[in-house]
Length: 278
Image 1 (spheres, one colour):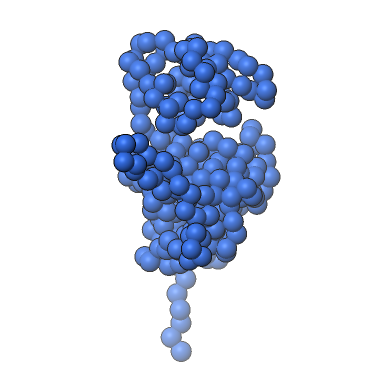
Image 2 (cartoon, one colour):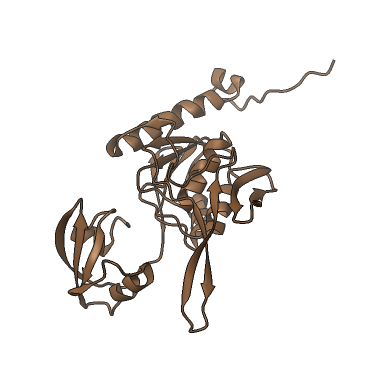
């Protein structure tokens, strides 16, 4: 859920289950039916009833023009850049590259995937490929027993230390990114165990023009671990309020460890290590 969205400002929370939209019962409706009911012209009022931990709560929201930017950044420390990714939508990789072009991340990056429900799998794997050199990003088992692996063939374009913030609402394609960078020893995960949505679905068009989603496989991390029903475990357990501070400390420490020895001795010099001719 975006930080400045209508839903967030109205008091809705991740995990709320929509049961009524404008007094119409949608408790057993499909995702597409609920999405259609939520749409409307900017300025019109929407009445929602949701279940939150078994308790019904009612909300009134005023629709606004939809803003599709799913990326935000913040320079949390001089050489540490924070990137929040709300979902892996079509423009995300392009938007992230733009944010990276404007930020300073010589010490490292913090990727916030908390409350990220996933999105387009190919976008998520393209994003993960920025941090990974040759090898697997994710694989999935097909119904016929075959396994399909999505790989990166080029060298990584980002080589600084990385911390990823995750929580119980990090799901699907966001779990693919977290699992790939963790398995490939490319990032340290901070927060809580993720949701555990690891199924691959394809849309099948029906003769009447409608479509259905069919599960065609189960996602595995590069080391072969299933995501479905299990999720991704953090390397460092942290509460929501402590996740970012701990990640900043972690990146600072990792950056110091990864400095060449001569730069630690002479931090203000341009000395570079050199080999010796025999």
